[in-house]
Length: 364
Image 1 (cartoon, one colour):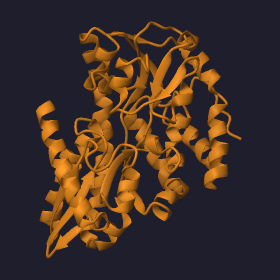
Image 2 (cartoon, one colour):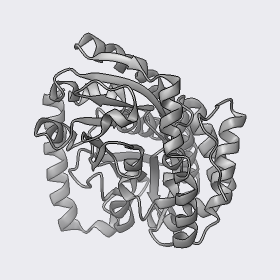
Image 3 (cartoon, one colour):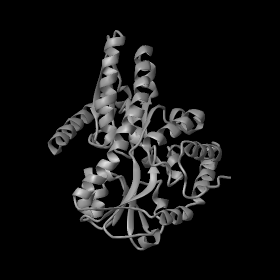
Image 4 (cartoon, helix red, strand yellow):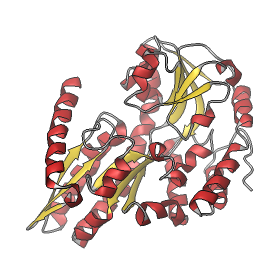
């Protein structure tokens, strides 16, 4: 894997230099019947949603365009921070460094504030296959969630995805949230307030291992499969992975530059949009299936696996019971959308899908 990643990174660096010379604003290339699009992410290609972009979405678009239209399409793919970082993929799609970008809204918790919705209702649906249906329903029903993407950042949301059920890997034993007192716990950003009792520290996938190795963090709120892939269990010297059921947030956005969309033939664009929706369900199913795989891998590597006690979960959720409403009101004020109504719908649809929250969240 290391060899293939190194090869990929080298390719991306060369491509990045070429892009800076050629000008980012004209990423899409159409020569006769041949179309070339630039697609990428700040995350490395072994992260599930990125792998799905490369191995599922792109090949299906290529095959269908060749079969159903007079055009041929190809993708230049740039991952692992070679063209965009995890923190500026939105900007990379906006300015044309990429035509299509996959990114976590958690790293744009201001510009993509409203799309962090599922982070703001903790202990949500743990099954990603159910969670994404709820989020898709809400996104389709409330266009205000994606208004800024199109009006301010010149890109369209064409697909959603996510990882799986968030848990907590620590270098120490704990049973209740107050046991985290004095311990530094890493989290992505919008979920930092989940870290009740502990000391929340912001992290990203590229920096997590070093932060754990150097003592910047003593634990991390993440997913078991990602913990294993990044070898974070080695940084915690084994430790404990607790299935806390924070929930499977739908935090991955697949977006496309509006200028690129205008340049493409309608039949090609239709295929891209359809396959982006297929990517949505296929990628989340793959991610969901990797949760238990990750637990097995961590256990095999010497990590103690346990599940949070129901009483401890309820106590933790109670400490967060006012936070969803606080976020809803803050987003309403800042983004001028009816976030309380959106959040109430999100909670309602999640419960209709069969989930029971450990505490009742009152959204005013």
